[in-house]
Image (cartoon, rainbow over all chains, first blue to last red):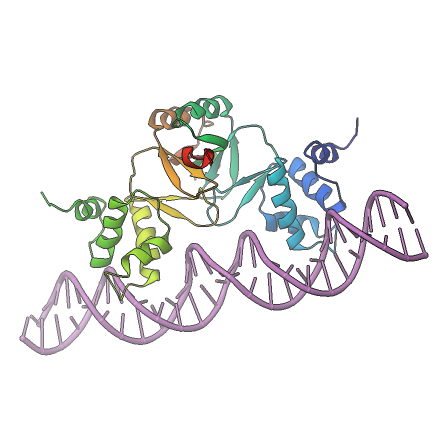
Length: 138
Length: 138
DNA sequence: TGCTGATTTGAACTCGTTACAATTTTATTT
DNA sequence: AAATAAAATTGTAACGAGTTCAAATCAGCA
């Protein structure tokens, strides 16, 4: 058993590890802030000076395709990414812009029964938008 | 009582009617296909030759701000719009690209109870992605 | 060491969307 | 009805997230 959770996550999803891919996965594992590709790039370019923004985009696309990460379109302007692939919902605060996790596994499970006959669902996203508890009090 | 549902929808949401705004609202009322701004422009420029794409974008933004329409970020690449403001979910087929309505009013209502204390929600979006019944059978 | 394929890189590019100033239309006042 | 003010529309230019692509680099292996 490896001591590196990020390494394990890559291998578990049939992704050949590399310095860049490990760095991106480690960032997603350590920061549950739903970062954008740009935020990830800016966070990692310090430790990997040759890092290219294209690599970050390619890596994230690969992660999503392999099921190692999730892409959120809650923002509408920037895609952001989540390393937690267990089902849960998200809340976007329109004031501070932060994305929060919301436990909703059972609700998402229920929702699958509402689909018309013959529709096969591959992913479900539940997005809330409004004001978070910090921004609501000011 | 007016005979024009689009006109009524605008007035009901404090939107001053104009030729362009009426045309956009009429299109949304007549076509529940969740069109993009570009699709709406292309559909209307025939009957309003001077129509500007900027006007379509401005109009849709106004509609959303006033609650007369909803913007969907289900695609991640193109925003699309829905003239039906009653709560329901959406299904995006990754093969044909169509967006389908899914009845989920009660589920969305339930979901509001899952939010942490102090969070105030202004809108909830439930997005399914997968294969529609047409595309699944081929 | 040399070869082959996968990965990374950066520059150029695409395209949805917005900013902005000018023009046109609509409403209001005299 | 003419003049004035306010609002809406238009087109161009610009922005920026994300992608394409060819060249360079790296990893695995004979």
